[in-house]
Image (cartoon, rainbow, N blue to C red; front, side, top):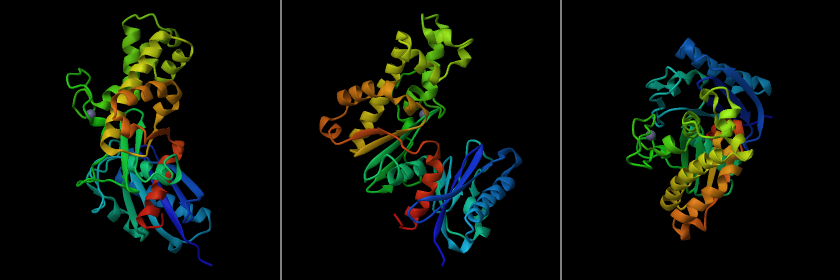
Length: 322
Ligand SMILES: [Zn+2]
């Protein structure tokens, strides 16, 4: 008896995680390899193919039983052409990835990794059941995916969802990675929290954060969260500042999209308990109350596997199986 499968590939700058699943999305096997990005494009492409062959072998399956491959990649894309325009950690500029993988002889469905994560959370995670949903990942930056009537919204050039780069403070001195000043991402990401923590310690504030590290360079989000839990007032102020900025951005998202759910993922969501009250208070204060009533802000469910589960969901939705 032949069986039908889909494959999801989460291509990152340091690792490739590939999974095979049945058509309900139940993962049957996974293969992980280092990307070895430094060895160049051809090596990375071969490693992607190897994970596909190996994951099929893991379940004693056959290439002919695979209906399609979802591929989540970082960076801007041209989805219909199958082109990766650029990636932060891979030498893949203007690469036609679908052509490169053509000897797999399988339909390949390309998606930006944040969008893939949004699709994964929508079908298999915290967004289940919500047809209009926003996924927001808050870690070193702020990224997201917009789900409208069950489908991801791509925009005309497949670039929609760059929510981290809305300007929050026009005259801010904080420059964002995108070049602009005062972006949401520059003020409310994990990187922003670390910057605020270092500034507090360097300005000789009386704070436990300073006692928890040997030098300001060692400060990270976990250290600041720990100081907050130990009752440190400065850490509490920093977390409240971060939560306020998060809430301001989320309030705008709620006003624009009127979503049923906002799913918050990424490293910062692990400290959500310390942030959520201030975030809710800010949303209540700044978003339109008729829209706030209908939205639920929840943390993501899929953890570190969101990328690969998202890639599987991309394959399943592209094949109209979800
Ligand atoms: Zn920016």
